[in-house]
Structure formats: C-alpha cells, structure tokens
Length: 490
Image 1 (tube, rainbow, N blue to C red):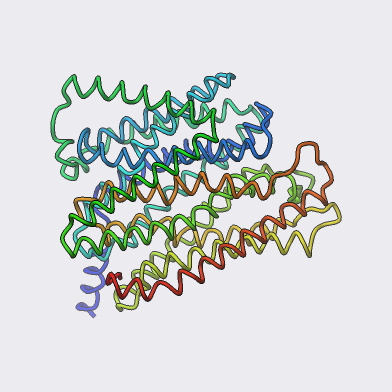
Image 2: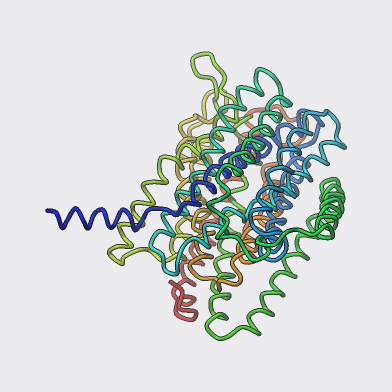
C-alpha cells in the first residue's frame, strides 16, 4: 500500500507544471479578456457604429485578425533575438491595453489606430507565454500535452469572462465602457507580470539577459510607429491587405525551404513535419473564425434568443465555447495523460485531423436545425446552437491547444519562436483573411428583412462549409499514414 502511494505521489509530481506556468496562465487570462472584448464585438460594433455591410464587416474582421496573428511571427523573432521574451510580454500588454482604451473615442480614424495598436501588441505578447513554457519542459516531457491543454484553458477563461462581463457592460452602458474595461484588465495583467516575473528570468533568451541600449529603444519605437501606419493603411484598404497576406505567406514558406536545405537531415524532417501540421491548422482555423463572422450574425438574426421574455445577448452565446473548454479541457488533459502512460496516445496528426472533422460537423448542426426544424418565426432553436458549440469546442481543443504543443514535440529547439510564429502566421493569420472571404457565403444583402430568406442564406452557407471541411478531413486522414512514414512523425 505504501509503495503504491509512493508511486501515485511520484506520478503527480512528475506531471506538476513548472513555476512559470502561473505567470503564463494569469497574464494570458488578462490578455485574452481584452482581446476577446474586441473580437466578440468587432463585426457588430463596425455595423452599428460605422454602418458597414456584412461583407465589409467580415473583411474588416478578417484583416484585423490576420494582422493580429501575423505579428507573432515577428514577435517570436524579436523575443528570441532582440528584446527577450519578458520584455515582449510587457510591450504587448501595454499596447493592447492602450488600443482598447482608444476605442472609447468615437472616431473612425482613432478606431483604425486602436486596431493597429491591438494587432501590434498581440504580436509582442502572443508567443511569449508559450515560448516560456516551451523552454521550461525537457525533451519528451510527459507534461507537455496536459500542460498546453490546461494553458489553453486560460485563453478560454479570459474569453468566457469577456463574454459575460462585457455582455452586461455593453447592454447597459454601451460599447465604449466595455472596451474601457478590456483595456483596464490588460493593464492588470501587466501588474500581475511584475509580481511573478522572477519565475521567468532563467527561461528568457540570451537577448533578454542584456540591458537595452538607447539605439535599440529608439529603433523599437520607430518600428512600432511605422508598423502601425502600415497596419492602418491595410485596415482601411482590405483588398490590398489580402494580397499582402498572400505574399507574406509565400515568403515564410520560402524561408523554411531555405532552412530545410541548409539543416542537417534530422532537422529537415522535423521542419517538414511542422509545416504539414501548420497546413492542417490552416484548414481548422478557416472554419474556426466563422464563429466571429458568419455565425456571430447568424445568432444575432436567426436564432430564437428570447427566454421567459428576456432576450439573451449574442455575445453570451459566444461564451459557450469557453464554458465547454473549461469543462472539457481537464477531461482531455486527463485522457492524454492516461493514454501517454500506457503508450497508446493518439498521434498529433490524428488529434488535429479529428479536431478539423469535429469543427466541420458543427456546421451541420445549425444547417439541419435551420432547414428542417425552424420555429414558426423562421428562427433556429438555441439547442441546435448549444450542440454546435459543443462540437466546435472539441475541435477547438484538439486543434488550437495542440497546434502550439506540436512545436515543442517536433520543431528544432533553435526554431521554437519562429515556428510558433509561423503557426500563428499561416494557421491563423492567412486563415483569418481567408475566413473573411468564406464568410461572404453568408452575406445577407442590405435591406433584406424576410426572416425565411435570411435563414436560407445561412443554412446554404453552413451546408457548404460543413461539406468542405469534411472533404478536407478525409483527405488529411488519407495522407497522415504516408506523412508519418516519410518523416517519422509521432
């Protein structure tokens, strides 16, 4: 009995997360709270305050989100080679908080500046917590999958708090109070960082150990200003922005082609495996971002949201995703640990592909509900939406949480920051831009008020998205064994 207890305690200690996990967890909750205040409200806010059409609001969301996921590629490099990881966390939290507070000012020019600040701040912050965690685990550490799955819960706790708190603030006090609250929470995350910063000192890169010279500070400020001006231009000219994202993605893959050519044989295969998984993540994210565009407006217009005479705000439905993440995250983490101890864990490729399929299936839920079981007012029951979010969350957990974890599994250690940045660039940035285009399938013409016609537009779009996602999933399932055999992927 004593020996068995010793083994249990030993197993618990082996799976205990490193000290820096608390720093990463708390700062991420605050950062995601602020970011999702803007993400949840962006399409609705742009239409309400600036009279944008569905297509224009979708395009704006796609460009802003693409920029927010483009900058981590640069942020990862700056953290590794110029400023250090910890400084990037400080810059990111400050810029995002400032951007959200600027949204209080009712001006489209200031609105564009604020979006640019948030996008740049996200770039500084996004890879920093995951980079610190990656450096805190040893090779083949059994805590990696569970650690990153639990860390991913922090993202969704921040998201959940944003949907609940700011749903109330926006409804009773207006958009600008909600944005102000998001900015203040980001500043609170900055304070939390300073209380816990000592846990990250030994994990920082070499660049973070050196004092910043005045030259670097000046160049950094100038870089942020120039980058901000460019982002404002892209936010205003969304057509040019989509071309820019295509060029950026091409250059990124060209860089990794160079790395593949010059790297030793064992690293070549690791880089190829990472890029294959990034492409799977791209397919998943295109569907994921529909949550904030086509699905967002679908819930606003075509879902029966009145219960006992009370109309439920759309943003509360968005909170179903983080609720399910918090509930299902520990269960999945426990399953991964259980299977890992018995050496029966699913491969990373299998998890990502099953995640893609689950995300595709969620569109069938609302398409079926809208086509075969609408209410008398041509609206969809909230039960279908709840079922959709349940499937959506399973796919989300298996893809987004493990997409970052796959870097620590596979990427050469010298490329951790850049490869994580690439995951955000291609698997999220390009996907966001593409998602704005795909969301156009659900574009409701200006002036259309017939609820039956509007519901038909949404159900047709969701059938197409679900079928496309299922076809891609089947294709990837077919390719997975071949890819694993060639590159010896886990």
